[in-house]
Image (cartoon, rainbow, N blue to C red; front, side):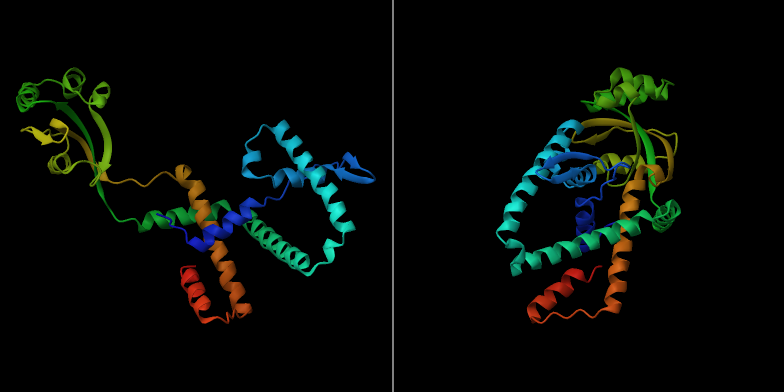
Length: 280
């Protein structure tokens, strides 16, 4: 369900990595280096772009770490400017790349901020509607070590004993405290012998002969049968939102490619690029 493409996922990861800070209303001066002022907005930017390691720190430590980095950067940058490094061709190329990358990220954030809740819900509804119908059962079981024990339990059930009470008393499975309740499950979730017996039962029925599996001997009761239920929207909303964002990114790239022709001169590289991006 909702499998993202590699390119879209990678692009979104970049956009998230370089967060836009939420600037304070008053851009106060918080430090000075000679005559150079460091304002709150500078610190907010530094905090937003700390590495993941620093992002885990408590807020006060994160603030100090960002300020320390910011001061170091400004001190060394001053020396770099004095040495004329800003005029080097490789530096200019890197700055041009960084500016374009930040514009890329800013545009994505702008587009994603415009994402409406109803778009996410519509994408969820579309996915749910496309899900194939699949039966699931709600079953309980009593697990014992021997076939004779299982047969004795079936006799007691035939005599009117309550399944839940027998499970709590006799079962050796961890589900015994819940009356052997295994909840709802679809095919492929249980060992084959157990699954075959459970899905063959009618609602309310229990196995009339013991079922053996690698875990021991089971007596199984089916409480209910129904079509498998999709996950609730509120449970998967973050994942669905991510998919909508990925799809929007793909659309942005497709639209941009219509306006600008992409040419790759090296044949091998061109083929590799086309292979990598064909799933977008």
